[in-house]
Length: 393
Image 1 (spheres, rainbow, N blue to C red):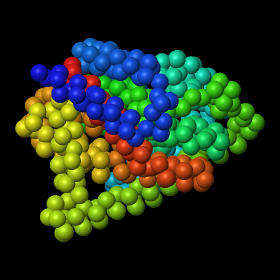
Image 2 (image 1 turned 90 degrees about the vertical axis):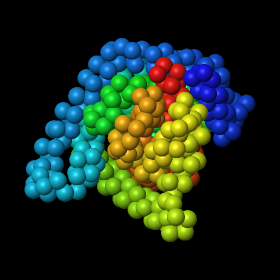
Image 3 (image 1 turned 120 degrees about the horizontal axis):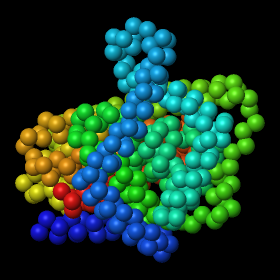
Image 4 (image 1 turned 90 degrees about the horizontal axis):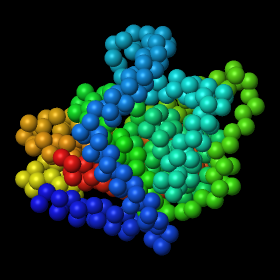
């Protein structure tokens, strides 16, 4: 009986993706079926073995160390301001982008990143039927995050057509940065964080293949991933330091505006309807919670937490889940935990647009135009991951 509703949920998620598709006749179903099968296999392995947890934990600790190095520079420049904990989000989350940007520049300068790009792109593109750049970008998003990932493709960003830019942005919104995996693991069970990381990687390919189907010819794909750096090492360092700082400042401004706007909308709905926008969305999400396999009795609570993630961010939603975790069944907690591990929320539209704007003004306007469709696709990725994990819980 536990499988009947999730099976229906799987078909409904795919159906919604088809409903929002740019070209239903262009959808390639064979790689989609293969990737869904891989999701089920990964969910089983990661929730019943220690291999995935050990692997992702090792990567997470590596990035935590990088953030510690970044903190040295932040503490030197901002002194007591950082030590007293003021402006913690900007100092602790956004400014480390500068250091990560430098590392990306070094990897690019010494041709290490292009080699990794080609290798990963080759393997994943054989599975997902997409371009090598798209395949690389999805993995890079899961490692360096939705802000920093655009720095890795900044040389190609200006020449990307809209349909390929959508896929890159969709990957950035569907995954999470390895640098904050450790923070997630303090709020929800690590095994669900690990599972979500892998499921969302393939889920992003699945939904993007349906919502935004296209074919990349080999010549275009090779051209997109070529790099011809002719700068000196120190010229490169200066460029990437400034790029990283530019992205951090622009993203901070966009995030400030979007979060404030959502707060205003919540207040307005509260005065008019007696419910916040977030609470009203909870009623909307309750049926989707049920389709993910969450029991009817817990669907309203789960729907509210899902809505909280949508209108704020995953951290706020994880805090809300922590408040009611004792009232929910282990199955519901597991499904919700996997659903929450992604950047699929309204503020991410502003973050991604801001990150692109810091590197290419023209392309940021393109991103802004399909912002809501990005959120639609990324939310379907989270729903798909929740449905898949419900089969093994």
